[in-house]
Image (cartoon, rainbow, N blue to C red; front, side):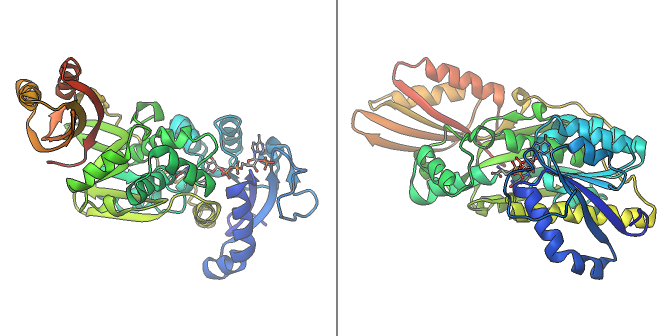
Length: 432
Ligand code: NDP
Ligand code: HSE
């Protein structure tokens, strides 16, 4: 088979959860894909770390190897699909493939969120495609819609629930009244959460995905480390119950937006008004909500993880690469980070804030607390107070306040002798 005829010989790097599903998808739907699109996708070589491992798939002799560099260098391979994960050796292998004039498809969010600029620069110079639909939101169509369907818009905001594990945990905490640890164990039993859940629950996974979305939406390079990040470990069942009483759901929100020429990118727990489109995204589902100046609000919802949904995105990218090759239009990298813009640090952002405090229950305490908010120029929007005998829980939701103002309020509250603890402070999405 030759390039330029809608025939593509694929070198697959990795055959685990996603790679195995890519193989099964090609075997199940390959003939139908060819019939519908005229594109023939041939699995020429597959590289894994442990070729001897049983993986329930049979390959022709010579297809499977333990040497990924051999697959990249194989003249019988036209395109590389990288589903092995990790930054190295994936980065080096993809650069090698690109230098050899091979298009690449990847599901690797950590790689793109850290080395996207380098990889896309190399792909542009080499005139090959670099596709990454699966790197954000698994099977959810989000990169192509942002790059193509919404290309005519100035994007004002991209907000998402980009991590299925944390969304599942928060949904269970809300539905069952469980604390974080119990919901995490349930997510681990069901195979959503890893044995080491750090990447998911501390927001690293969502931050990498947001960095990619922000880069594409705002045409400016955003690195994973540029994204402000807080995870969900501090969120309690009590926070979720109070939030609901006040008309909010608690979600791990990934938010990027442009304000006065600066880009803000952050991942943290947030109270979302119950009528916000993202508030209704439950369990392990992901969603991406985009606000464009002409398109208005657009949202996509779907499975952000799992072999099959992710393979669906990988193979869709392969079909597009094959179409491009057939049309002689390869090199459409679509990463036009042409106007680098400054990033807005979290200290300069503003949001309404929810605060849960435990205080001594006696006359005058609330007045002292309210005075601190007033003196720092922070306006209180709502209050809930529940007496628990000697102590009381106080929940305050503020109007929009600068992060710096809220930090001063918190520091002064911590100094009050009648305040036992500030249990949590969670930003609220939107205006209150
Ligand atoms: P797995 O751990 O299940 O699979 C990784 C595969 O890569 C394995 O087949 C492994 O070989 C192979 N591999 C690892 N190192 C090497 C190496 N040096 N050379 C050759 N092969 C190697 O990972 P997933 O399939 O879950 O994830 C793959 C990628 O897809 C990651 O970037 C991930 O972030 C991304 N992704 C995953 C999603 C998911 O739901 N799983 C969703 C969206 C994106 P062996 O099998 O022999 O050990
Ligand atoms: N672990 C991720 C999640 C999926 O829970 O959404 C892979 O990015």
